[in-house]
Length: 111
Length: 115
Image (cartoon, rainbow over all chains, first blue to last red):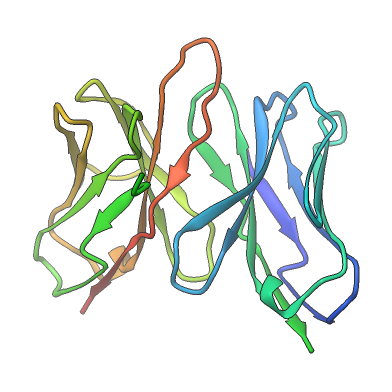
């Protein structure tokens, strides 16, 4: 069964800290891995998409890595800000065009 | 480009009723996928529509049905509502390229509450 797990479920950090969010997937035959941000009660905003042939992607203060062999992806957020507070979801895509999501990491960055 | 739009934003129904949710895809997209997100959980795939046909389906009962129109917009219908159907329903659109994966873009969702 294809499953995605995210650890930790929640994280609270002071402003300015660098932090890492973890995502694990059981089936390494993924097409790509995508990270999303979700604000309370809102839809999903795509942050980064890593193709299976890539090792990492960067956008501003965000860097996502992918290790298919170990079934892991990490999202690194540099110099966190209160505006980064949200739930972060990772999703794996297999050969079915449907995304399989983790349960998310709820991040709070306090001033 | 308005992106993916969904209506209504919020909806309150009672058990046993039927509901219809609507989605308009991003311009240039021809594929619509629907996801259900219960509180505190990740979205779960319901089904995907392409060329007005259901292309694939997740593990949801037949009470959940859908439709895609010639203009690529889509509806999600849920019959005989249960309390457990209360969730945020997300629509995602993409362009189907059989040789590659095209990123899915999500709408703001419809919050359904079943009383």
